[in-house]
Length: 127
Image 1: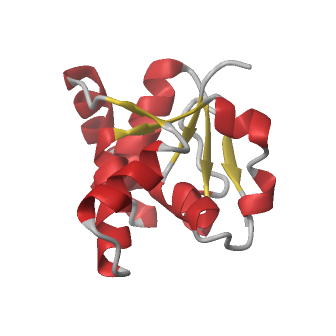
Image 2: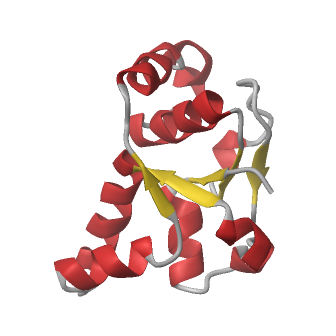
């Protein structure tokens, strides 16, 4: 299976065994990557929940491979504002989509506002 991209909400759903996590099968997780921008979001949320910083980092990276946020992805994320501003997508959301676009990969999220979004890659809302 080629790479798939997870946004922060999807990875957090797996870590906390939230609804929708069951849709991210072992096969999907084995090929999953996450932008370093979204990885920072995950670590922040875990620390807010009481994790120690190293534990948060290790738990997140145990499930996915980190992909560096590149200048190409920064340009894509900035440009995506045209298609996503009306939906209120954050820079983190657009960074996730930029990675998926750069990799020509499917993306997984729990964010309902992504439903029906057309950015050139398949988007799977897992709950």
